[in-house]
Length: 237
Image (cartoon, rainbow, N blue to C red; front, side):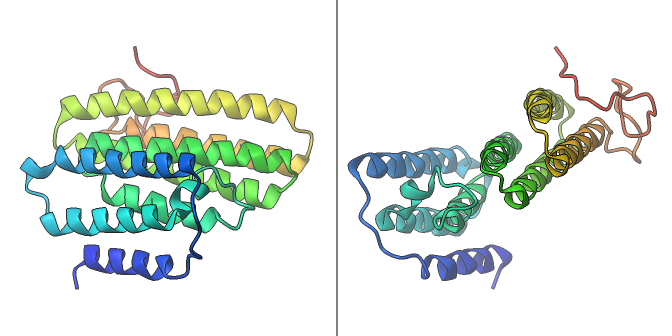
């Protein structure tokens, strides 16, 4: 079985554990919007030679989620919710439908923002364990986005430049949110988790700004080999 087939089979196994539920009219609309977005996204990449089988499997998985109703109900769930694991399944389906570098970057950045929102909510609820996990997951997404940008530099520098700027702008926004949050909390553990998240985000900036040529810094002079690079991201204009 191909890796894609194994991935979809794993998703199917997780879906079998989902309890059936009747979605509200609003939930049905939100679920349908998710599937519609997935179909539009897949349509834009048909001409690029991607596997039709992969598209069909991903579309079927999305449809199953919609019918179950749990997808819409879990969309706004938080890490301390029983529906939160379903939210993760939905996100995996979305990731399976992200083909182009631009779509993949959008996927990673949206998930990073979602994890940051969840971390803020968990800190407000004094669930520092879940907040720390959410912040770590946020930085994982930013790290994946940075690796994507770096890899694209060896394929299409023009596209890579646009992706890099989008990533830097997103990280700068996240850092501003984290800085405000850090100034609001008084718990030392929470402050430490936030500081660690900011440091990891800064590392993602360094990765993104490094060219895909033997690890040398990109022409803007802010690659990982530049000791003078700022620890806080600054988007290009």
